[in-house]
Length: 206
Length: 212
Image 1 (cartoon, each protein chain N blue to C red):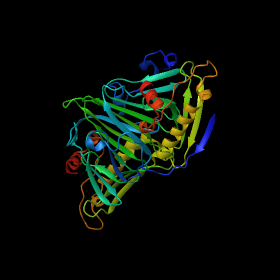
Image 2 (cartoon, one colour):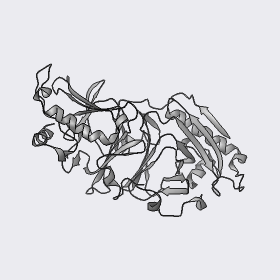
Image 3 (cartoon, rainbow over the protein chains, first blue to last red):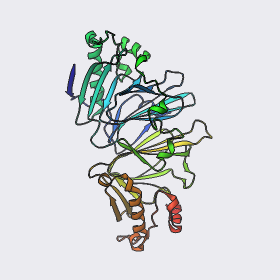
Image 4 (cartoon, each protein chain N blue to C red):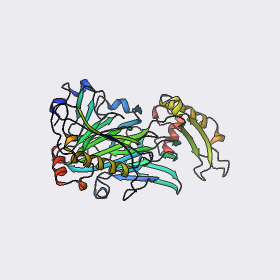
């Protein structure tokens, strides 16, 4: 059930690190940058704006005592410390535990909510990630795939989480809890354009 | 989903400072605070399309970097995230009177308030230095960019708690001898330096802050 991968995907359409860069989080200039994971120096950056009427993207942490949802209207800056598994509802359908801190920024104004996800900061991190699923009924660990990448390339991360999601969705046994028998719903990855119809439906739900 | 798995207690009982913008938390970050793998500086400021205004320092919109392509100036814009890569000399006019060079990256993000009248947030986020990583306080000649004076603080080894003292000592050392401010190459007389915290300005430093 646990697989360790050293990904080797090509750079593809992803931008290379720049010495001087601005990420537009709002306005017309933001359109080409929204919804993509970029690498800039020691950070990965992702940003997107949505109509405030759409379901809020919510950070949920898996802590020793249980799940904790960090969500509120308006503005918010929440930091998920390295090693803590977290799920962002409607953004990625798995629990992510990384060796890097995850910063979740929400700005809700003028009928629009802008989200920014920042990963990293410290030197030498963003190299180890775990994609997990837990039973929604009893919390037991159902599946986990680890991704290691010494180059810390976001495109490799995106590919690895996509492969992990597809492997999970294709294996009913993996999605069925051995402890309580509950079957986990379909998972989905970080990139909506890659969703199958079932995955798109799942994204709207959890 | 997960209905039975949530902790039943209220958020404030479970986690401290879970929202850095909360009125009870934001004061902890006004003079930069390490938290996890990053150092956070968050201040309430007037954020408009053209300017970032600090209540005490005035306009602090003009940022400069010395890059491989030369001197770059940019003006902060609302909702525009800027990254300054580690190793890049950078300074902010009227905000701190030296070139800062750190070994980690810095993110700058001005967030406008919910209404045109409301104060916004100005975020500066940088990685926590580790190991041999350090901060440098540097003065280049304003005329020819010759390196004139430099002090280093070993932040990774000594910790961020000593950063502001090191900054103050660097500024004082640069200011105490006019020869430090005189370019050895072109002879240009440069202004004094000043610290990020304007409340520690001497009269002469206050005047220098107005200049550059």
